[in-house]
Length: 114
Length: 114
DNA sequence: AATTATACCCAATTTTCTTATGTATATAAT
DNA sequence: ATTATATACATAAGAAAATTGGGTATAATT
Image 1 (tube, rainbow over the protein chains, first blue to last red):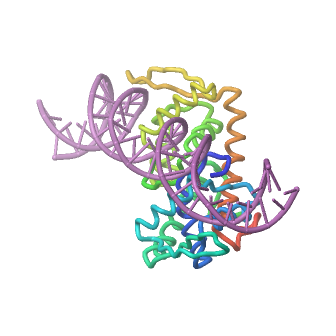
Image 2: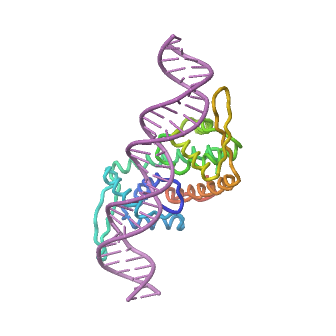
Image 3: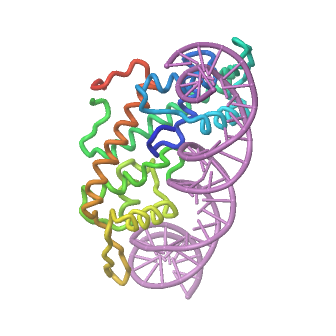
């Protein structure tokens, strides 16, 4: 995932949040969306993405639907009800973590300020 | 390190930044400082901290100085010149990463806004 | 004809953490 | 007195999550 070693652990949150906004997406589409949103700065590798998708599916957060498009197979993922709940939980965790990071790294930081 | 699985990768940045602000610190002191700054929400475990300190020292980012205080041994760490450069690099990486995360997770987000 | 883009997948390895354990001294609580 | 907590270092086994480097296949571009 990208060129930096940070944030091993946020990939699940990224996947879940994108699926909350887009209803259904396939793997390759997720990599392209992230690349586009970050102007090429974060590149999700397939070796990270597919295992993460399979794990989330195994945990009941996602369901799949295979579809044929132009002789190519696409595997669409959507949130289950558990998955919908999980998005909120993961987003809270991440926001709380980023807040704590700022408290550690930026002594001037106050919540609610830019 | 704390109860959440995020963060893998930010521990080095935390150590380096705290040492930039404090000139010299010992391991236990770092765990306490982080706990205090985050009101107990992030707890750096010793199993994560000490290996990270040893690695940064081996890479030439930190130097050590052992001192006796009340019959107890303390190992103080300070930034080397390379370590000082590394703080800036790691902080830029982290800030850039957090910015990219926000672009992915918060479609309303614009830089410079709270 | 070769490369790039689309689209899925897995395996070996590495990095980074958790959990558990060990050593040792000082202080507070029962 | 004994136990528990706090201070202070450290290592080792295992898990989690990535990287790196393959593999398969079709479509489009150079």
